[in-house]
Every structure is written in structure tokens, then in C-alpha cells.
Length: 252
Ligand SMILES: Nc1ncnc2c1ncn2[C@@H]1O[C@H](COP(=O)(O)OP(=O)(O)OP(=O)(O)O)[C@@H](O)[C@H]1O
Image 1: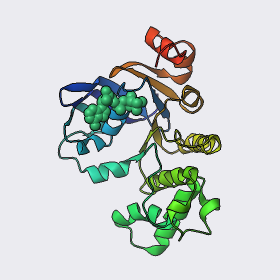
Image 2: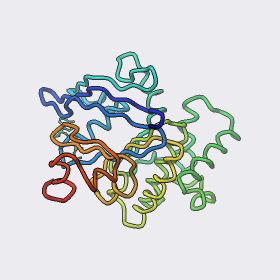
Image 3: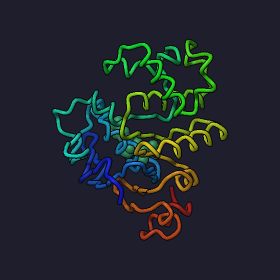
Image 4: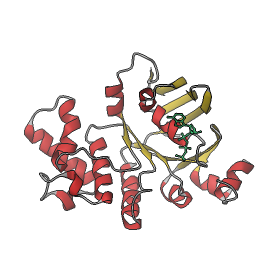
């Protein structure tokens, strides 16, 4: 087994009385892609959002359990969520660039975290755009609004923005589901490149996508983690009947 990036223990999430995620324990390794799959409403996004404390923003959401990065439980009350979100980045279903230039979208995070030197910021912008396979398309228009980019380019910009603050883990909630097939395959190629450096956790409804890009797959059903294993095993010889039924399209 490789190095652990994040270890989740008995994580439960409640919305009021409703338990949307039920005592899930799951480990994520460095330099691996884990796909979270399961039918609509099974708690995948809720689980994902808990990992960088985005659920803190929902008034009646309550979390129990632990999530460890090294010797730190990131779900403890005293954790600085701004620093946490630097370590654990998030890419949403719909690209959400800031209403700023391409350059400023990338430079914003590093500047916020204290980098003021223009040359250093230029370097970070270039490196982040290169890593997100967007440099060639944007290097001559860095001052232009990010909103003038296509949807697929905007999503790669959002990935570049999360890389710019040097995270360890990148969470992605159906990052390609709003994109056309060409943009989708670019995002998939990009994810395969990025896993050399990062731990990636991706929610996807697309079974083929999960099979293509992930090393591990976790199947959720009605808030519970039913099965977690090598992606190849989940898709060829799942242990649980519910997993088999879901991946062969019998429900969901
Ligand atoms: N902000 C919220 N307030 C109350 N209930 C919520 C909230 N967000 C999600 N839920 C409920 O929690 C459960 C899990 O939802 P969640 O969005 O995590 O599932 P999901 O597996 O990601 O679904 P989908 O694939 O449709 O996005 C659902 O029953 C949903 O209705």
C-alpha cells in the first residue's frame, strides 16, 4: 500500500434528523484517483464536501467522526478551514471561475496565502496553467476575463486555480458532467496526469469514466459505503450484490 493522504473514520453527516452519510470509513492514498459512485441521493457529494468542511456552510448540517491527515483530525472544531481548503482543493460540477482575468483567477489564492512577489506569482500562474493543460491556449490572453473561456477551458482553469495553492488532495464533484465529450476527455486526461502529484477523489455518475480514470472505487448506497476496492475488481468481480446490480445498470 502507498502512503496515506487521508484516513476517514466513522464519518456520519446529518441534515437535521436525517442521516445522509452513515458511519463511513475510507482511506485515500497519495497519487491515486478514487471514484465515488452510487445512485442519486446516496450521499456521495455530502461525503465529499465534508472532507474540506464545505458542509460547515449548511446551517442544519452536523458531522460526526474523524478524518486524519497525518496526525491531525481535520474535522476538529479548532481547525483553520482556510488553510484546510488550501490543502484539500475542490472542483465543482459547474465551472465557477472568479469574475476576474485568467491571471488573477490563478494568482488570487497564492497572493491570499502571502505571496506578493510578481515574478513568483508569474511563475505559479504559468506552472499551474501548464499542469492543467491550459497554458498554450491562454498564454497570450492572461489579462482577459476568465468568463470568455469555453466551459471546458473554465473547468481546467478551476483545476489550475486549485493546484496554484499546492494542495495535497483535490476533490472533484462530477467535474465533467456539464461538459461536451471533447472537453470531458481532456479533463479525464488531465486527471490521469495530475495523479502523479496529488490524491484525487472524484464523484461521478459515469461508470465508464470511473473505470477509465480511477485506481480505487467506492460504492455508496443509501448513505452507507457498501464496497471499496481496486477499480478493476469492483467492475469485474464485485463482492456485494448491490454493487453488481448498480454497475450492471439494474438500478440507479
Ligand atoms: N443541504 C441539504 N439539506 C438537506 N438535505 C440534503 C442537503 N444536501 C443533500 N441532502 C440530502 O442528503 C442525501 C444525500 O445527498 P447527496 O447530494 O450527498 O447525494 P449524492 O449521492 O451526491 O446525489 P447526486 O448523485 O444526485 O448528486 C439526499 O437525501 C439529499 O436529499
